[in-house]
Length: 310
Image: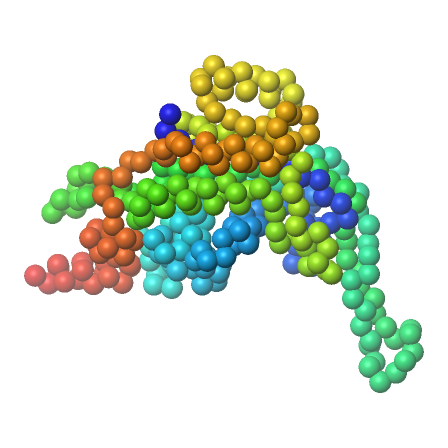
């Protein structure tokens, strides 16, 4: 079976944490008081883990995205929108799908000293000091869910038009070799094996590893939140996967395999199987943009004006 999507569901235990804070430093929480982590933060932590695992891999910063799938892993996995050139065409949708990670139960919060300011630095009067506290959650079980779209990994869909600007055909262009695509899929998979970038006070809980993991190599684009399902629904899903010969791995508390063993088995399976490849050609990102004349708004306007004057 060729792999169309890789689903990963992980379950983490956090203690005395502020895994994802608002601008005011307070933990993000739902209306019923449950801690959650935004999808943007989930992607950020994924890239931080990949950066930690693969020191030599080019991963641009969020405020300086290269907008080049061939060269930059962030551009490929997370996508981009190049607004500097006022371009509608120069954008890419993320091939890593996530949902916000939500605590299973209502969170209990407490405050701890964050920083203390002297109102008047020229006096030792303790009454003229201002104390700022930071809010933390005592303990939470939080589920993180990811899906990698292997069809569009390192690949872009372009369109051919005739002289009347009518649609003729679509072309899938691969921007790296198949070996590099599988390497990037492995980076994604290993990047979900632990979390970085969780807190910033005294380096408290800056890394965490999952208690349980579910990894599924699917022939369908179907987003799965495995550990958010009831035990009955989990059993039904696994039965469906078995009946359709879909390969999956379960590791951690309550399963035969450990988390590390599940990841090792998943990486081995990935190395011996192929990703779905719909590409008609292989070109660098820059070559493809030149070939299919991906223009920004100014270039399109100029081209229309030139055509009108002829």
